[in-house]
Length: 198
Length: 395
Image (tube, rainbow over all chains, first blue to last red; front, side):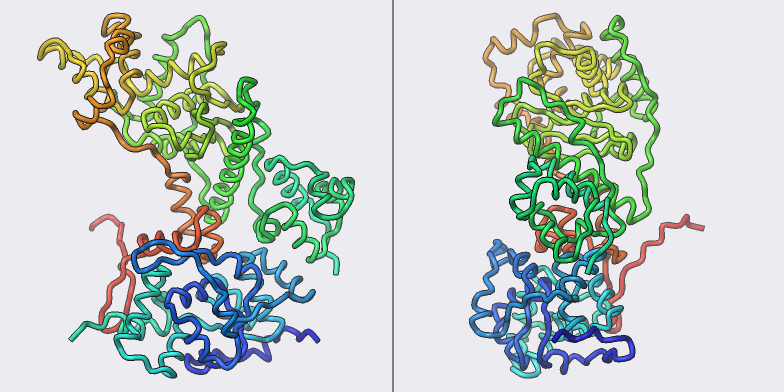
């Protein structure tokens, strides 16, 4: 049975960084997935969650490259993440397809599929895209960001400061991503990515 | 669930199919429907369910977002305007058809961005000139001088010609992969004004000549299109002759050139090196410069033929003198197009993926651009804030 999208009266409050990062189901967008792949530890980071993240067909198709340590482009291979069971493919139901086509009027196909599945199934969506997040807020879809997932992993796995720094730098260099200025975890990111060797 | 019939989606699908050279039957086969059904879909006479819109997008090779986007990108009918020259080789014909389709799509995207930002192109209206074949080539000379005056360009070399024509004249100029024998595409569309594609693989000097040539066309045509071939066709029309003469006069104005040559002659007999440096200054090829000097009677006739016969290695000489000129302009999109797209992204009118699609780049490249162009940030007391630029007049 297909769940109805949550109405504003049933809108969940925005989860805090820790619980959103470790809670179960979710639908992940290409921008967040690309950041995680750039860490070389996507399996470990996503393993902190209790359930696998769902991936839509368009998301999978649009993930093409990240940069390696030498600045060369390397193709993204998601198969280890599917094999490890931290990602699962999702097929859209008729209701989700209808929602997807409606959302595609304002956002791109990948983001529209993610939000359609998240809205209809009542799941959080993992995306950093401002426009997609604005859309998600209107749909009362809880949002997970790259930084939420990383903080949850850092709390759980407790990597050394240097290992955490390395992970963040890999995202900056490999996926050309730093959190937006208004990201609540931007200060956390800056503190850990800019550690100076003693 | 049924949605209302959408004439706009139908038109968009039809345009997409035509520009990609597909038949209705081919699309019908992909969709598993009859050809008349496809005709009805394109005519906006069918209702679309969401599932069918997804199937349509797949069959026509376009994203769902492109079909249903709101506000809808304007449909610009440019590709159909081009009459491909008979002498184009069959192998190049397909390439040319793709290029005209690409130009049409890019111009549509450009208008869409202007619509999103609310910033339509504002440019100086060009006075229309009428070509008088009895007044060749003096008329081209006069119009080039008038245009230089109108645009406030003086009589010296023109730098950043592409940016200048975009900014001051309102031409929409793209750098595209065109067949080797094609220097440029020119068309004027009702909604978009003058639109140009230059050959991304041609040398910069040739690209500049093409821009001058296409500007000449624009000044003498209200609506129309042209495929500029290389070398010019043997049966050259009066419009082509005008555009060629105009390009030379616009890039190398008589008075400025005369003054430079007088300076050179005051030091002694001009040498090949002098000519190469002069060509470098004007960012034209040595051939274009010497033929222009011949036309103006500033050097004796036949100089270019003699230079060619002398077997001088002009390429090596230019390299030794360091006057090879800039690299080909491979920027597919106009600078203003890029700025509008980034502004739309900054205003949350576009997502990262939509920005990538409009710029014809992958996400990684778009992020590189965004990071390099990101507003400057300062950190103070743990707060990261943007540096604000105050462009108001000082008190």
